[in-house]
Length: 103
Image (cartoon, rainbow, N blue to C red):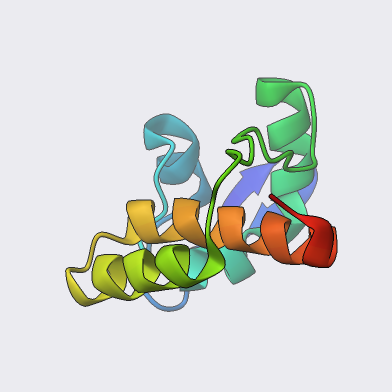
């Protein structure tokens, strides 16, 4: 267990990575780290990034087609290209939120 200010921060129960390790590398050891360190992240994000909320920065491109994007998403997931899949997912979410009048 490590001490940060007055709070004791236990290492991740799943992978054993400490919060200090995360702060040094900027990388979590596993998905369990998100839950383990959740209470400490907003303050850290605010200090590092200036904000604590995620803002989608990828614009919707006119002509994006839901059917084509869904096919691209399936292909990206099957190829385990999760970064590309997340980007396509975000575009689909934006298009769907715009409703039937979307481009």
